[in-house]
Length: 142
Image (cartoon, rainbow, N blue to C red; front, side, top):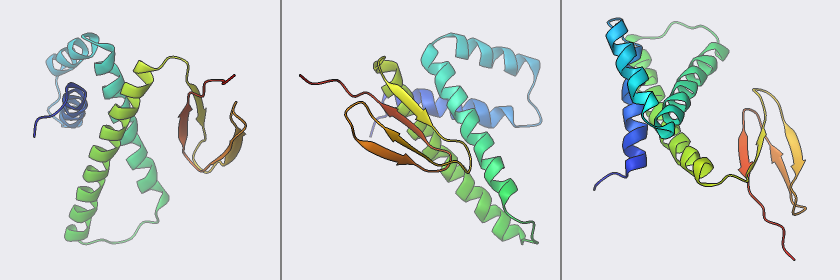
C-alpha cells in the first residue's frame, strides 16, 4: 500500500521530532530541519502539530501519581505513548490538510479541564469536553 503525500509529510515531521529529542542533535541538524520546514507550509504545520502532540504526552504523564514501575511496564507505556503519538500526528495531519483546504472554518477550543457548550450558526449545539479542538464550516442555506 502506498502512502499519500500528506501522510509522507506527517511521517517526515514525526521523524524530525524523533531525531530532535536525541542527545546528538546538532546545529547542522537544526539547520536541516529549518530548511525542510521552510520548503512548504504543510511541512511547518505537520511539524508544529507533531511537536504539540509530543508536549501533550508529557502533560498527561505529569497528571499521574509517581509510582515504582518495572522496566517492562515503563517500556510498555513508552510503546503505547509512541503509538498514541503516531495516531495523533496522523490525525493532526488530516486535520491540517482539512484546515488548509477550507478557509471559512470556525475553530472552537477548550483547555485542559475545561468544558464548553457552543451553538453553531445552523442552530445545533455541541458540548466540548476537556482539551478539545473543533473546526466547523457550516454554510447558511436559503
